[in-house]
Image (cartoon, rainbow, N blue to C red; front, side):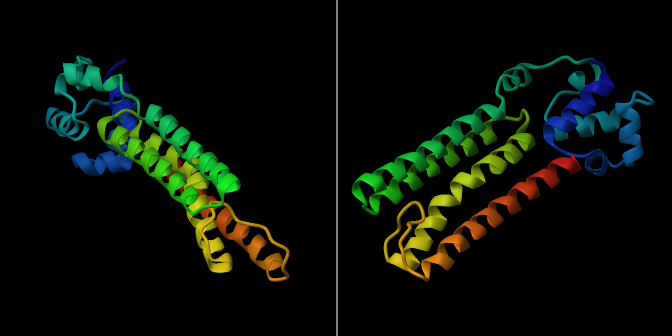
Length: 207
């Protein structure tokens, strides 16, 4: 890996565009493009600015020499925390639905929300600790987990308004009004989730 590869890799791991990096170090986007395509090399003052911004040493940018902190951080991939958090959120949804199905008590919804709060906390801690693939991990987390995180709160609101108790999934009953309300729940749920997913896809394309 040469200096051009290292600059490009640092930028992508940070999750920023060439234009954003150019703004950070006070050059044009074309200058960053030339650095990454080996058409030119950055001046030493720009290397120093990049080392501060990316939190690496100038030796790493110029020569690829990593210090102990960089080597340790390289082993921590934010994607791992996405997986763990997603599993926690999924368990929360399943356990909540199962408890409600068996017991039909409001505590079922609380249990689901506690699991999901723990899942989000795990992801947040992992994101703060890791510097590897952080922006990609954020996009992946929200693309997947929005479908889980929105479901219980929206179901709780739906059931509270129409039935008076916060079940963790939309309940079905045979009234004429429900023929309108129940489909409306799914339309709102899908619209919210797709809106977030499309926003994450759009953010990813800008990188």
